[in-house]
Length: 398
Image (cartoon, rainbow, N blue to C red; front, side, top):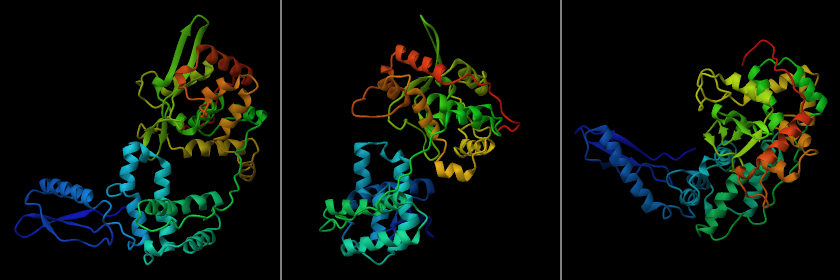
């Protein structure tokens, strides 16, 4: 939930007035005149006045008497939160993160109802927090411990900040233990299963082609969705043609194009036959900014639900039921594990890390540090690991 800022209305004299909403109580404050009779001009006056109001009130309005629920909403608010302002000063792209969006929504969806509107910051104790934590777990028994911990963190993070800013006297989150995580390792396909999937006629052309890209490159789902025609490259050198995919962006359904997960771009070789399939699929008449896997309606990338659904249906088509998929934790990300497993016997670790995009303290160089020799090694390893499979699909398009 986002705090309401202000409202504008016109009086009988034709002049527009604005009313701010108190950041603590949410109640209307005193009405003030904009001096304007034009709605557009009045909006500008009110917006300027509100920005000034926030600058003056940013921390002074937050006290230990503020209800916890309203404080957390303030904390995650984009307009009046000092925490938000500090984060943006350090990293202007900090809030283009799906993680931040998920954290905000976690509190609104799960915790706001549990904590209610009565308790204030000064009354928060470790005992109360443990009670909230247990109630969260008991109320939503189907959620994993990892998810419960992530939801609970949407409350504890703002409380820790309140302690660092001396809004409250001590940090009530100290010594609050998270629930033990039961992390399920992502499953990996067997080679014969991948061969069966590639030979199968899929119900979705896009779904199958995205799967083929994933197992041959180790690309993440968002990186595949973000592929544009201009990212399909062909480099000619003394040893012949080298067909490549430039991974420069990732696609988020919330924020659109953003940097890849590691923050670094990279280049991955792909077999010539697969490169030609992609080039033909996107269409020669399209410009370089066209998405390879675009929706016919919007021109934006298709929903990530499509390749996940298509893979689920294809796995059932080769005899792996939905129950077996859950037991083995087989999902689209399993293609990345498969690529890593298939490449490892043929490549030195450093070359594989550069291509697959894993970050580590030892690897700080960007994708352009990958040499042509290393790219050629990956290409040769692909030819050893993956047979040429004709691109076939069954009937339906997307």
